[in-house]
Length: 145
Image (tube, rainbow, N blue to C red; front, side, top):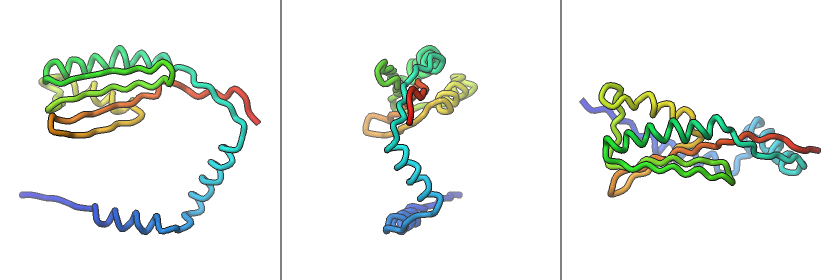
């Protein structure tokens, strides 16, 4: 038995219809107006490092992917930018087996996915790459209008 579904054509038609210059829903117009007002205001915010999240990325998530890479022949890289307070955790390899019994990495991988702010997956001739981004900061208002 084989099952499949292809929604690409319908999605393209929906997006074309959406982007044809329709003014949008009242809720969308309200959001746009709010964004415009915020852009014109003089609210100043400062990034404050979230030490707990920073430490979790470095001391919990990286070791999970490090162990997985060592077992499955992958590559792992962690880049923590002290200026932007953004962390990038990347796994590259020919495969990624997530197995609760054999490697005990399914729960750890799930926690990485749940705590990441963005996830990018790409493929190529040499395998695939999955990149997790973590914004390890809180925005704190310092001054305003």
